Image 1 (cartoon, rainbow, N blue to C red):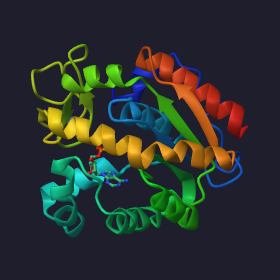
Image 2: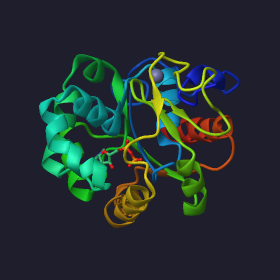
Image 3: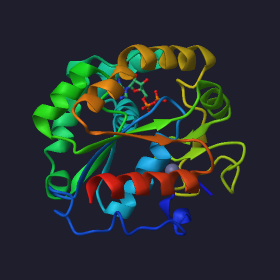
Length: 240
Ligand code: ADP
Ligand code: ZN
C-alpha cells in the first residue's frame, strides 16, 4: 500500500482534525511540517491534509511538476534540485505566494511540506499566511539514510514506495497509475548534500519557531500509523 494514501490510517482518531473551518482560530488549519529528507513529511502531510480537508502544498512536488512541464518555475529550479541545493529563496517564495493566493487555500488553509526551508522563507511566509502551528518531525539521520536508499517515487503524484511497501504492480503507482522511479536527486551524493543543507539552512527554523511559541516536536520513528497518531495528538493539544 502506498504511504501517500491516507485511507490506510483509518484506525487513527480523526476527531482532532475534522472540525469545521474556523475552530482552530482561522480558516481551516494552517500547518507547517518541518523535517529532514526521509523523515516521512510527505506521507504524513498528505494524511493530515486529507483528514483536515485542507490542501497539502509540497514545494518539492510543485518543482518536479514544473520541471517536467518545462514551465518558468521549473526552468529556474532544475539545476539546483539535481545538485541537492536549495532553489533560491526569491524563486520559491514567488511560487508559494502564487499558490497560497488560490481559493482553496484562502477558504480552508494548508499543510505546507518542504517550505519554509530557510529563515528568509519563514519570514516571507509570516508576511503572506501566518502559520498557526509548526511541527518538527524528528528522525535520526542513520534512519533517514536507510529509508532514502530504498526509496522510489511516483513521478506523477509523488507517492513514495520502499522495500517494505512496493507498488502492487512492479513500477506502476497504486494511487494514480503513474510510473514509479528513483528520484533523480536520490543519488548518494545529492542525498548527503541535501542533509547538509538541511542542517545549515533549515534546522535553525526549529529554534526560530520555538521562540514564537508555534513549535511542536513529534517523534517520527515507528510505523506510519503510529506517527500519524502522535501528530494528531500534537495538533489536538495545540490547536483546540
Ligand atoms: P527532499 O526533502 O528530499 O529534499 P523535496 O521533494 O522536498 O525533497 O525537494 C526537492 C528539491 O526541491 C530540493 O532539494 C530543493 O532543490 C527544491 N526545493 C523544494 N522546496 C524548497 C524550498 N522551500 N526552498 C528551496 N528549494 C526547495
Ligand atoms: Zn502516482
